[in-house]
Image 1: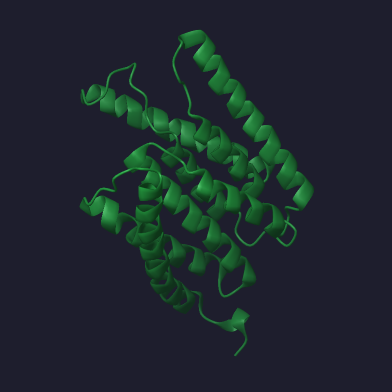
Image 2: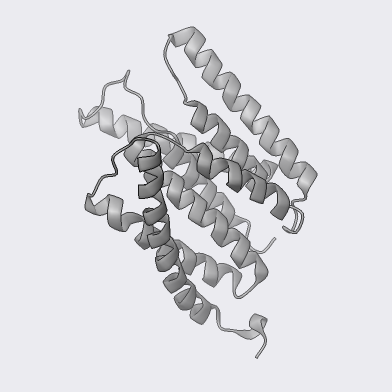
Length: 219
């Protein structure tokens, strides 16, 4: 039986189990990376079980979407990175260079074999997205005299551009901004945050990137 003939539902189940293991590895690595940064990792249930559960769900969904294919391996790598960013930034309000730099190098290399991407569009989108986010961060600091966006978010936006290309990156950013706004408004209405309080943008941008990545399909 050829790989292309394997049932997508079977691929989804098997790949979800793989995702469970990958998510556990992501949590294990995140704990050690936190300690390298002088941070104390938490032990709440969502912090411990969130990465493997989310990774298992996403791996299963992408396995169903893409089937047994080389592209599934590439997209699953990005899913693992995004899961790490989501939970680490939620916990520590930090996106690590130790994660982003190797991931960005891999993204540029894999753009050579990713359908409908290519290294030059990926590089230009990553550079352009990073510049736009850097300008937003600088403008926020200049106008409001406060950190409107962390530099980790700037670097993460560049990584998104390398992985997704232009149009999907725009979709991911739009979804991330909308989601962040809705959550921030909800927290203010529930009186858990004040209007001047900052929130971690990384998890919302990563969520938008996951949606955009899924929307790419096999193209």
